[in-house]
Length: 138
Image 1 (cartoon, rainbow, N blue to C red):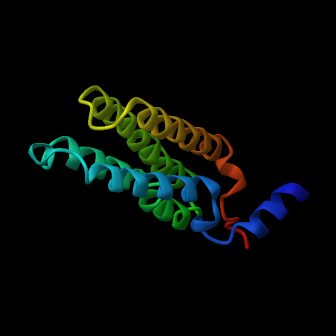
Image 2 (cartoon, rainbow, N blue to C red):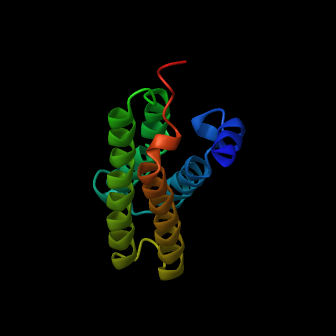
């Protein structure tokens, strides 16, 4: 119980969550790397990987929204699930980018691994969502 209280004191907003910070940083990295993709990919792979990585910043956008819905555990978890799905989608686009040789194998592995960490953080939040719910009786 004391650990839970201490954790909540350290996290004042969604931006204080490590998973948010990691997702934001990796989304920006993908954005920068995708600038080097071929022009003919601008409206297909480049657009897809940018949208899904930013949407994961659904651990940026969706997590911010989830954070504000902490009065309702189901709504909180639903937004976290959206973030999880977008993270997995981004991993697929990373694989395509590596296969098409728009990213080198090492860059792809690093990005993919970071998204595994993001996914792990999201799953941890989902599985422990009750720790983050705002007590309605207060």
